[in-house]
Image (cartoon, rainbow, N blue to C red; front, side, top):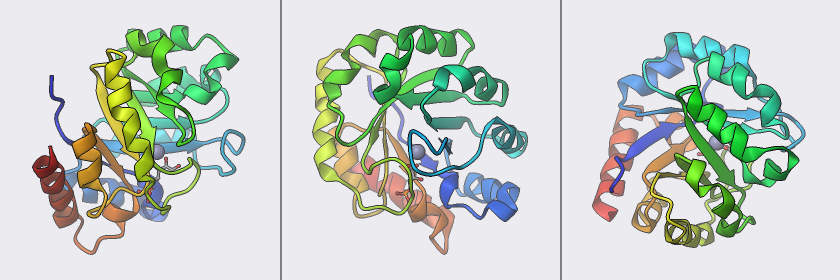
Length: 221
Ligand code: DX5
Ligand code: ZN
């Protein structure tokens, strides 16, 4: 089954002093999902925001919130983000052994959200195998989590067919360094959700950039 192409602007690259306007700007420009990067200063050496800001975004957003938890303890915070409007909740497979990851994925689904796991660039696809049956989405990092504006790592794309070979038929997202020069390779590899921070928020015409990304992805499939 082929999943729809989804362009998911990462709000990490937005102007946080005018977050409502920034959300409306990319939604008017055709964004399919809004990607929210949550960092705890522990799993990654950076801090962003928590459920309170997620809820504020949910109030102004019409499109689904795709929440990417770059945190060591997703068990502690998952319900708070689901309460705050997360439609898709993804945590990192690198922390999966710190608790019952399968139970957490089931909990996310039971609450009506899509459940996702993300892989750092140096984590093999194989790490997902025990969880394939509980997953709606896999988020392949194409930079090391923690900061926007980094350079795309094309070598991570070989994980996409490896994940499919495990029988995973959900959505595959990519995050980091996605823009007009990198999106086609990701689409060709089988990715359908494209997270883009700098490439969308840094564009002078965001609607044109989103349309350009969508067209490049569609042409590469
Ligand atoms: C990195 C984040 C990304 C980031 C992508 O830790 O997960 O979502 O915002 O930013 P760009 O598109 O600028 O590489
Ligand atoms: Zn992200």
